[in-house]
Image (cartoon, rainbow, N blue to C red; front, top):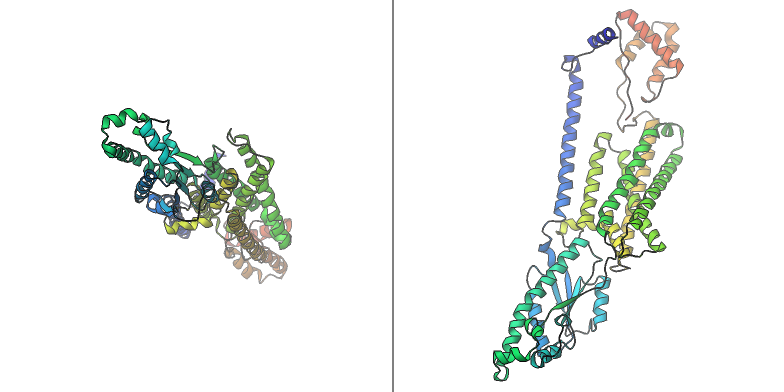
Length: 498
C-alpha cells in the first residue's frame, strides 16, 4: 500500500513546476481579489460601526426640549431666565420657550407632546413654586425642592441617545441649583434691611440650601429591562439563523431543481421555504424574549404576535437579499456581502440614526433601525409611534429583494439549463483538449463516429452530474484508444460544483 502511494505521488507534479504556472497564477489572482474585496468590506463595516456613534454631542442641538413657566412670580421668572441661559450651553439640548405662547398651555399637553415624539423632553416650572419658596424662606413653612421644576422625559427613542440627552438636561438643571440658592439668599439678606443671621433663623433650612430642584417624570418608560438585548442580539440572531441557513441549505440541493423543474415552481418553492423557516426561527426568538421579559413588563397575547411580526418582517428583508447575493455573486465573495450588511444594521441598532452626522442618517432606511423603532413603540405602549414609516420601509426592502431574487433565480436557471453557467455562478470552463484530439483521431474511424458523437454531446452536460453507464463506457474506450496511441496514461479531471 505504501509503495502504491509513493508511485502515485511520483506521477504528481511539484507545486512550483513550470506546468502548473497557469494554476498558480489563477490561484494568486483569486487571493488578490479576495484581499481587495475584504479590505473594502472591512473599512465599510468599521466606518459605519464607528461613524454612527462618533461624537454625537456635536449634534445634541438637534434634540429639542419644551420649556414653559406656569408661575408668574418674580422668583419663578428669575429661575426661568437662569434655565434658558443654562440651556444655551453647546452641550445641552435646544430649549424652545413656549411661556408666552398659546401652544402647550397645560402640563398634560406638554406631556402628550413628549409622549408622541414631538420633543425629546420638557422643562416645566410648576405653578405656585414662587409662593411656596417665599413662605418657606420667610416663615419656615414645609417645602419640597423637587416640586419647583418637572423634567419630562421619555425612552421610546434610541436607548443610548435618550440617556445622553436626558443626562445633558439634568446636568444643566443640577448646575443651576447652587447659583440660584446664592441668588435667593442675597435677595433675602438685602430685603428690608434683614441680616444673614435673621434669614437663617427664620428660613426653612431645606429651602435655604436647595431652593429649587427637579423631579423626573418619564412618560414613556420601556417597561422592559432587556430592551437593548432585544434590539441588537435578537434581531442579529434572527437575521443570521433565519436568513443564512435556508439559503445555504438550498445551495446544496438546487441543481436538480434548476435542471428538471419549471422556473416558476422553483421560485415559489424557494419563497415558501424561506418564509416557513423565517417564521419558525422568529416564533422561537419571540418565545425566548417572553420567557426572559423580567418583572417590569406584563405582555399580552397581542404583544406576542406583534413582536413576532416585527421579527418576521425584519428577517424576510434579509432572506431575500441573501437569495439575490447567492444567485448573482461568486461564492468566494458572499461573505463580504453578508458581513457588510450585518455590520451596517448593527450600527443602526446599537447607535441609531438620531443625532448623527447627516451622512449616517441614511440609517433611517436600514431594516434594523425600523425594527428597533417598532419594538420600542411596542415596549412603551405606543409612544413615539412611527409604525407607518417603519413598516413601509421594511416591506419595501422585502418586496424589492424578493423581486430581485425572482429575476436572478430565473436568469440563473435559464443559463444553467443552457450550459452557460455552473452552480457556482461562473461560466463553465473550456472543453478539455483530449476531446478535440479524439475528434481528430475518430474522424478516420467510421466505427467510432457514433460513439464519438455521443461522447462529445455528453461533454456539454453540467459538470456536477454523475455520468450514465453508457457515457462511462464511451469515456473508457476513448481513454483506452488514446493510451494505446501515446503509450501514456492520463488522469480524469472532475469539476465539482460549489
